[in-house]
Length: 143
Image (cartoon, rainbow, N blue to C red):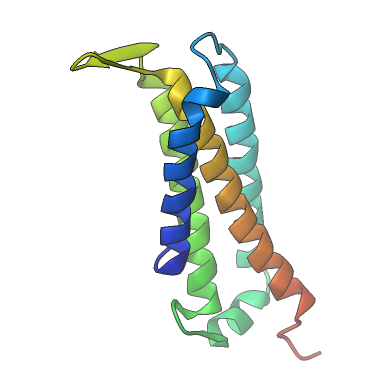
């Protein structure tokens, strides 16, 4: 993502970081369910990418200009890559981050990352799904 899309993503993450302490408490223990959810989203993303790659739609998307991403295919590529990287990084963070760390007297618990991970993932999913619906509701290939 880049431009306005990336700034919107950062805004969603920052707001969710601020709200997170009020939503999840340190007794949250359902990290395996969160990892399962992220794995399903990653599977959906990779499957969708494979379907688009194997279709003649890629040529039409490549030929469709986009003011921020050069063409619609590059726009989708940016959305897909950002989404997959964010979700894999989130899974990695869940695995390696301890239950809590104290930095200069401030306790930063693992539970504070749950809401930013969920909102970031859902934002990426929304952007991809919105773009795919736009593509499929406005045919670009002539029969």
